[in-house]
Image (cartoon, rainbow, N blue to C red):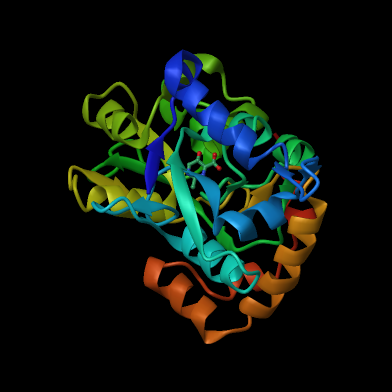
Length: 294
Ligand code: 6CS
């Protein structure tokens, strides 16, 4: 089942309904004991009791994809679902949200985990508890066909003051340009990937910086854009499941089962199905990826 989360909707009304649900399903949850007392239950136990965890996603294939029937798929949710099954939690419920709302929503108990390709970096690792990496991937530019300005690196943008680069507001890529100290006048903030593509086709930007595989998925619908090779001077991006810092039991159990799952054919099949390198996330740790600036 899918819920669309927008801050205004939550603050207006849905929040209330969700708040009711939230009280029933988080704050690591409370449940009535046989003596009628209210007992606090961990998010892990609550997930087992309810039979599902709520997951923050973005609907950006191949990291996350929502089917017409509302079911959630993609590299990250498919791994999450399989690992949770080994922990006695049968399903996941997706909540679509922008990247810059994922961590605030997690820590406000609007969902229990983020599994969306939310790339690890210092500020995010300080705010949530990431599992070990599930996916390691690359960044690219989406440019007009023929890449007329021959933009292939972050340095190209720095060396050409007239180049304009579109990035998702609050996304990892905005952080890349900030860390590289690209002047704000060259940065075009967009609210979602469709607007990023439109910024390029409308000549409001010379390139759209996004994960390579996300761009490849987008150009299937929009052949007026082409995708550059992975950007050499962009940081290595990696993501895993992100939990609330307090959910130490859930994180420990998840990492234990994830380590086993990453050595199975099922993990390889999921990565290959969505176009990810099944070996890339085996050679790196969350601690290493959390060193990414930003
Ligand atoms: O972690 C992020 O913010 C980025 N991750 C993905 C999969 N797409 C864009 C987003 O900026």
